[in-house]
Image 1 (tube, one colour):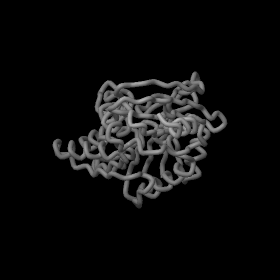
Image 2: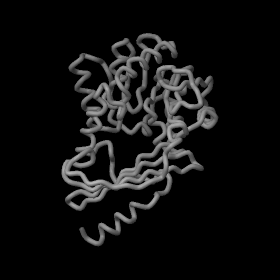
Image 3: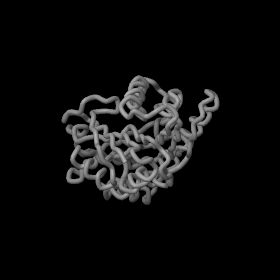
Image 4: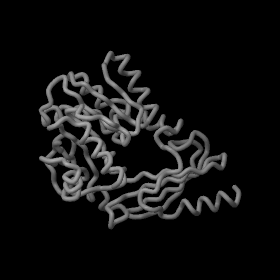
Length: 281
């Protein structure tokens, strides 16, 4: 390993500015995206997607809670490989799914063809959508909302608001401070012959940090592989309390807010690690 790599490792091992970007895309990495897709599709895994039994219950609750009619249009933001989109389509709703993982969208399209499901899938950054008064419901599930900086969050809410028909609803979830009650800022490292981050040998440096004044958690992973290539992945999570998320939504024009512990309709309590929100245009 040369001197430059040591200097770069030292630089990346610092605590970064809030929402400082990764050095490369996590979602379309040829190796990492394989592991992500496998996690999505594992029915008993609660990592990339929630367990499939929960997804089943979630879809049914959303249909019952929102009162959307068969044939109405749903916008699935961060749809992954289509786990929610397929279920809504089978219940006779029209679904457009958007995700920025090429592998997940390709898999979703292939499955839609195999299962003869009429779903529109778009490989696109949802911050760039430009729909107008088109959807009856928008969903963004598994706390993706928290990865956004305040500026990107407000931009997305504006675009969702424009995409919804009058009276349309938005359902999403976020993590709460209870998720991070026992978390402490810490650093660690490991060596792997092969693993989640690379197919070849690599060293992995982990940084976990909480920016307490901003209610933001960071998981940073710096990967140095056997070719001496270094990349840094920053996984951000802005966690919210009910008051804060209410203020953000009302500023964006949403009203008639409802709160639950999760996206299956569990009654909200202060100990819940997640907060599900329903908002209306």
